[in-house]
Length: 198
Image 1 (cartoon, rainbow, N blue to C red):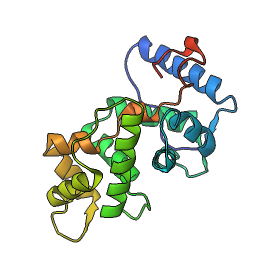
Image 2 (image 1 turned 120 degrees about the vertical axis):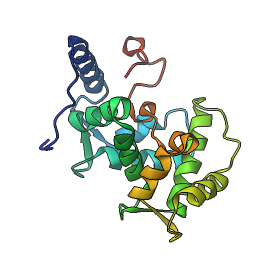
Image 3 (image 1 turned 90 degrees about the horizontal axis):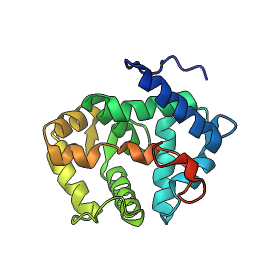
């Protein structure tokens, strides 16, 4: 839909087949070829409860919607998944930064970080994706800010975010977005032909 970016290039015919399969699943789930926020939330929040998951889904949706037209097309979707699966650590962290920077002002506040941490933890546990984090959202946020906010200005810049996460495995694990969180698939049990690989 007019994006200047191109789909990532990988060698071999298996990628073409994988891309075809992604497109097939995408069209089954979104016959119009576009995902609206409502559709994304419906798929994303299935099995997870609360307003946190809906807000987190909305933030992921906004991060996927590169051209800010209010819908996610196949190109935007595949570009994000491809980057999250095969991108460099810096590319993944740059994408994750956009996710945490809820208001898009180029800096992450404590409140933005805490809200995302809370939503991720609640959703992961509710969907049995992760073990409960022994640290609370506030404790995670405090630990992240202590390590990343190098200039002590109460916000984390993109540079601080990337440098800090690259230097610390725990930090990178906490801050990188899991590609499984952006896959749109029919809830389990509705169509076994779709499988779980999305």
